[in-house]
Image 1: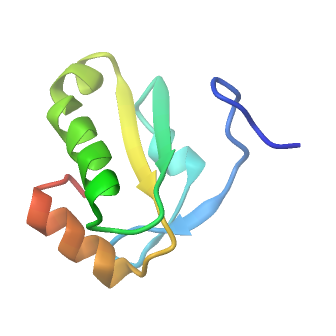
Image 2: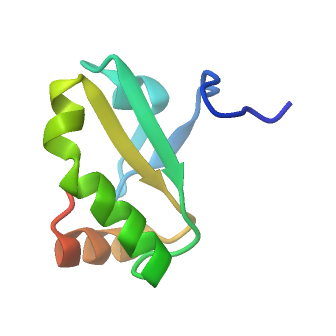
Length: 90
């Protein structure tokens, strides 16, 4: 069954931009909620706009105990360049 908006995310593991394995539990650690957004490719116009919107809202989100993580199929090296170019927190 496919989860919908507001549903609990199924547990998973993935590589972070540094190539380390992390899980849903890791992303939730110390946070009440997690915004998990999916995008097709690093550094494309729509994906960049979406990611920059989250970046620009991080102070407000963190003060509400919310963490944000983006997921795409690009390799860790691509994520590192994307994050550095737009000053995303890793």
